[in-house]
Amino acid sequence: MILLANGKVITRDAEGVGYYPDGGVITDGGKIVAVGGTAELKAQYPQAEFVDAGGGVIMPGLINAHTHIYSALARGLSIAGNNPSNFLEVLEGTWWAIDRSLDLEATKASAQALVIDCIKQGVTTFFDHHASFCEIPGSLMRIAEVTKEMGMRACLCYEVSDRDGEEKAIQSVQENKDFIDYCEKNPDDMLKALFGGHALFTISDKTFDRMVAANNGRVGFHIHVSEGMNDVYDSLQNYGRRPVQRLQDHEILGPKTLLGHCIHVNTAEMDLIKATDTMCVNNPESNMGNAVGISPILQLCKKGILVGLGTDAYTNDMLESIKVALCSQRSNACLPNVGWCEVTDMLFRNNAKIAGRSFETPLGVLRPGAAADVIVMDYKPYTPFSDENIDGHMLFGMTGRQCKTTMINGKVLMKDRVLTEIDEDAVNARILESSKRLWGRLNHREY
Image (cartoon, rainbow, N blue to C red):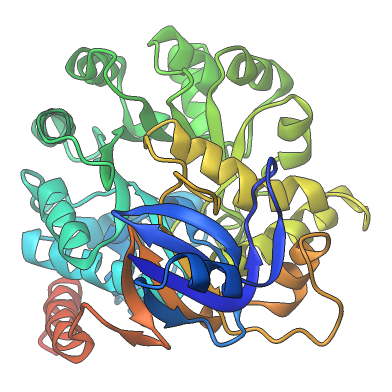
């Protein structure tokens, strides 16, 4: 039993007390037992191990609804001759080149790098969308081994695509099926599965049918939708349907399915997403960086669609992403008074709801019975602070790097910015060697 206290507690509990100016949480067995004032909890649970928040902000761990482990070793990378001028060239010249060189060893190193970064920035759960067409079989289990060893909560899938031929597509379908089978046989609320697909313009009808048959209705799908206009053009020209309509034709939509990006969707497609209770996830920095457009978040939310926030691995800092989400929506609408509620709900409410469709234990909230996923932010406000204005402090005062303590499933993985369960120097050395080998393969030279 652990008492994490002596901080300003933001619970995000709409049905309970929202703020304790000097409080904490009691955790035991991976779940929260109690939330309250520091003195009260110390008196009630004298046997609990005390973890001092040092006056910081105690809050629920953050959730990333869409990221890519396979890109973790790309930081600082320059691929010779790669100078993309459009989105397809970005994919072909960078990301597909990387995943075609990513073997199981590099996949493990990528997972280690991303998990460490998440822990340091207060991300306690992520939904990953993996690709390693160099070596597909066993890649999701290799990631799962890392998340289990390092204590991260994760929902994984493999990116099915026809872009490297039918044999690789069949292997990708099988990789998803094998991992879903594993999760069914070994139920664990720290590890869940979705059925992954790249994007419609790289998935044939035949492959969609294979995906649906292999899944057999067991989990939802996680797929990129209308991220670039090439996705829309391909669907219309080759199938006579818009992307979301084509997904519906193949029975991909539904309440457990997660659609990444959804930038170039029209109102009819939004209505279809809403009618099927399908989820969407916005990745603002990635979208702007790839120059593919701004997702119509205001319209999606107005339709009542559940929209979450991801990073597409552009960053692992969810607080950085929420800032960009707000600015991009206001810039796109040419209005300075829109988007606040939509983007804050995306991160602090909707991501928890999205997680609730895959995980059993409530996430994103501090209340008895919820997951003991708790972070402490090193933030000393110099203006009034409470649950009434916390989102303003998040948007304009905090960044992920201010996280100083991270607890996941009741285990303290970082305390006062020191990783407690990971030999960071040793792991980082192995990651660096792996990235050197990967970069050498990409540029056909030694590092």
